[in-house]
Image (cartoon, rainbow, N blue to C red):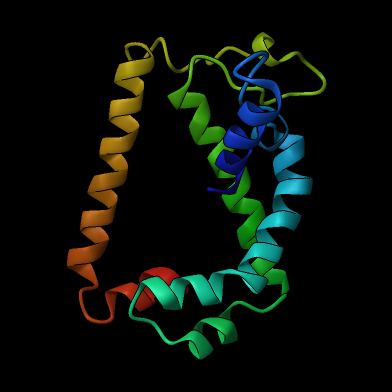
Length: 149
């Protein structure tokens, strides 16, 4: 979810012009800045936030959310997969920014899925189905398994 944090920041700084998606929605940004920010938020903020909102032990979350190669890889994978999923969700995505302009990388998938609205519905519906499947498959200690593994 970290790449979406740039949207309100960009909108506040520049309005909706030129684009509310930029650095963190590019592969370069996801691999570098996105991974670093994800790791910092996971270690410093996530344990307090997760234990305050969900029925999980803060110490257990802190134990799992330490700096490690596994955390770095998970954050990298999360950022890159977000960027690639957004290609199916938006008519454009600055995937190759700064090498190509923001609107020079139109989605090759959105038209195949029936346009922006239909693509968004399909992607969100598949995420809901995945979440429901996880919930019914792992009901015991669901939140702990989902939030900290």
